[in-house]
Image (cartoon, rainbow, N blue to C red; front, side, top):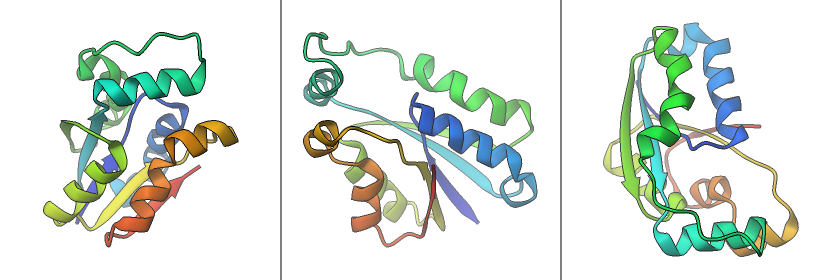
Length: 140
């Protein structure tokens, strides 16, 4: 079984990691591929605007600095974890990679957002759920 785990540095991703650690009998055997989608500069600017209009656009950074601390607990617990980093709009990227890689399951978190941010940015989990044919597990 091939499982795609879509993570970022959000609290929702922390809940996904906690969930995976809670059920090692289910998730420790299969190959887990962690996907981190780094938003392009335009989306980083919108993300900053959505959270605080006075906040500057988020600068590009090293994706490993962002996602490394999130996946370390999985590696420390003995999970078989690979990492793929892409740049783009997260929803369509996750959907495309799951299809191209013939994954059996997508696991991702669903964060809670205010109405304005949800309307401006959309929900990544909702986008993937609406467009992917791969089964999903959404952790809240």
